[in-house]
Image (cartoon, rainbow, N blue to C red; front, side, top):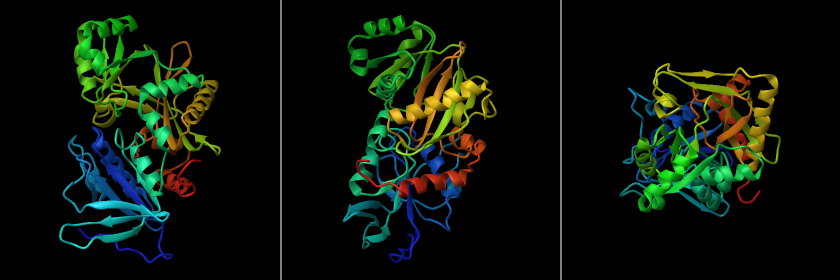
Length: 378
């Protein structure tokens, strides 16, 4: 493929490297997200370079073809690992993209001003790529290393929220070692927690690896599924009768972050909870209400708690905070996502659209926020 033409220093537009794919089980969803962002970025304002990370970890210069990154016939797209390898080289206060094809002289594409990391799950959303970008001295969209890492691990996220005085779902953690060495003890602890409950890999996303467990006979299968994706399993009490409410946050902790009007998700059809198929593959089985039908005081409380959760993890850029609204009117935080689903039909962009910010405007705001911040401690 033909690489983007390097621009002369001082005469070019800000260069945005859109990085997507990755090694996690959410590789395909990351590609879908990237297709939406690539289609929305203002090309008159920014020079855009698509960078794909294949499932084996190779970085490649991807084609700038957003339509090729869409879900087709319920099949997710993937990064083509056979494309030209690309590297990000940092030094002297700047970072350059370099294409290095076999038997060819490496080609320097030029300095990268900001990276838009659209990676979901481990090896991307969890602080790893944020640490790499910090070391390279390049600005990036979204939360820093600590917030990304804590936001990826639901176990430590709950600890941080509890320390900030925020209510969380009751649960326990079962390690792979405990499961392999003392299944009876692990099942007893889970049974004491109570049924129904949910078993999930705490460092995964897109509802991959989650099972609803209604009786003890289902425990083993649920544990084995979750352990395919993580070395520990978070088991949480099912919030019976709860409504699933979500709220978007945009901004930084050292400025006035903004919140959306909350939305509500209602899993329908054969889906007993908002699982992977209900999120991405179901056909009209999941209902989304934006804004959610909430009393004014409850909506105000949701938005205030979303900001507190954002601040508790020291988030930056964007986050989606998910709540359970219980039958008695109380609110419990389920989780915070530092890189939420980001296609135009995902909850986070839809909530901002309802609040008056279109998808292209949202993409631009995030890039602008990233360009205004330095790397390093802040």
